[in-house]
Amino acid sequence: MNRYTFREYVGLEEVVGPIFIIRNIHNVGYNEVVEITDQENKNRLGITLEVGKGFAVVQVLGGTSGLSLSNCRVRFTEEPLKVGVSTDMLGRIFDGLGNPLDGLPQPVYEEFIDVNGLAINPTSRQYPCNIIETGISSIDVMNTLVRGQKLPIFSGSGLPHDLIATQIARQARVKEENFCVVFAAMGVKYDTAQFFIKSFEESGVLDRVAVFLSLADAPSIARLMTPRFALSCAEFLAFKKDMHVLVIMTDMSNYCEALRELSTVRGEIPARKGYPGYLYSDLASLYERAGMIKDAKGSITQLPILTMPNDDITHPIPDLTGYITEGQIVLERELYARGIYPPVAGLPSLSRLMKDNIGKGMTREDHPALTSQLFSCYAHVKDVRALASIIGEEELSPLDALYLKFGEEFERRFLSQGYFERRSIEQGLDLGWEIISILPKEELARIKEEFLEIYYKPSNK
Image (cartoon, rainbow, N blue to C red; front, side):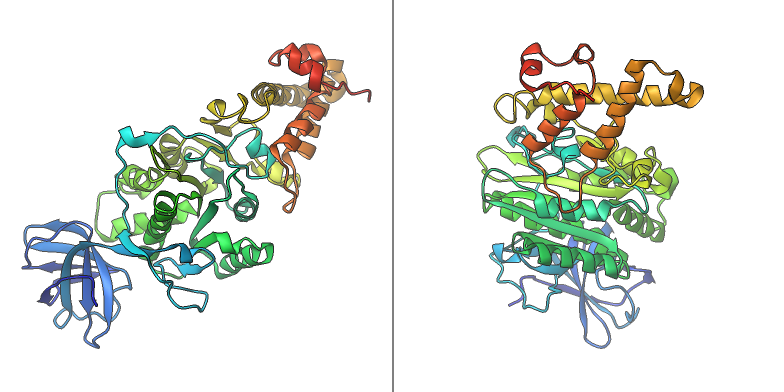
């Protein structure tokens, strides 16, 4: 039985790329579902992008190829696009529009919900609390991921963000058992998609992961809809099934490129770098679907991944993302070139919510002080390296030479960790103390004496 009611019209005025314009119709709503039947009686869905008195601009999900201006039949359903959701979606692989890719039948849906989500009343939001342990020390210790947080990864072309995404999906844990991952990939190549699937299957975590894959050869609209389908699934699991959901979205740059492409087709006036002026609000409509709600046991945490064009952090995509989200994890090309994985940059990376969710009985008591000291000492290492490049390492003071040794050990042992190596927060903290102990105790001014007495072990080398 069809879930929609119809008003049918015949004939289109204009078809441009993935959209068409229809006139002489009743007034329709924005984001309304449209059913289109071509001259071969094949059906496809569309969504109204722009509406006015007696006309509508419609984006076709299956593309406009084969649509006839005179014989095409258009039906407006007076409802938004809805997506079927259920717990059976865990362990399954779908395309960007929610169709199964794993050869299995459609899951039995428990309900249908608006793909655009429902706005959360700000007074109903709960401040993000408790952490998600990723098993990667440069994140867990230095840039802790908090439940309900939006923490993007800023990467670049050729950097291993795909490896990091699958490693986090495989290793991420919370204290409770009701944890799952929703993984959305947009505009990825076929071999990359196969890598994601193979990684989840071989590691045995696919049964707690729902995968949405939009390949590079899919229409632009598929890239735009993929995160919305994925987030709708996450909202159902979090707020209806009381699960803690980690949503990993890669690559948001491909999403923004699809948005720019569609904006150009519509003839809109471009803003920075040719992107539409509403790029900020469009990204916010996705990112703000993360969070925790009072009286709800579940949570949605987002880890969006984007590649910065030309490694430019001031580019509109990372720039606007940084305004909306609560911090960022930046990957550094220089570290990667030196064989360090994951190449998480020590200084530009930060998590704005970690200060309220570490120590104080939530993690080990020494966590905040050690993190602050590691940041401070590593910042000084950068200054010492700049000085050494001018006067030479032989001319450095003994203390500066120790800082250089600390920096090398910090990068080679703390930041660097194998793809299959999972470290607990306690292991990461112990390793941090081992490395910070290279420096004299007098240099550790950010750490209380009580912690120094317990954990500081001066190096005899």
